[in-house]
Image (cartoon, rainbow, N blue to C red):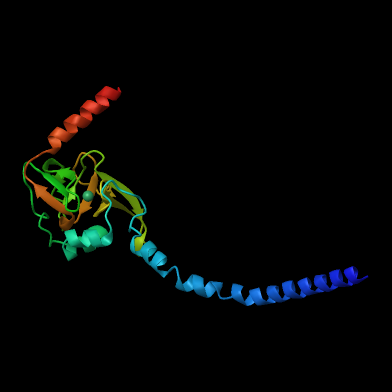
Length: 206
Ligand SMILES: [Zn+2]
């Protein structure tokens, strides 16, 4: 009898304790969201600050602060924040050399040759074609329009937009409307060597 009574008492004691502990624990579970909200701020901060403007990872991949250290404020605004220079203001708008390449002002990748450039009269440098594989196209739905944005395939830097079917007398009837700020002209036409290599590569594949 004593044993039974003792067992019952112990059970009651344990139950009470566990009930109490459950009650006691409940409030400790409540502050969790508070902790969650306060603790991961550096995590969220890192997430947002390192989020690139373009989702894709490019061969040349830098943080905004790294780009800011390398580029001028205007270059950063246009290349990394998809800005646009004022029409007629650009260095290469009325620039018509017979040879040379227009490289990316962000990563120096050759994007266009002097032979691709034509006089469009639109106020920005215009090219009817690009160095093969150098420029990537994306649909841009900003400002309620559907346009084709062009970016540097190596660093994702914003170049401008491409327009088709405008009736220009060019081999492609396309106009790559590029910000001068996104470009850096190099009078040494090194693309010739690059295309030779690409040509050899494609021949080897065939
Ligand atoms: Zn680039």
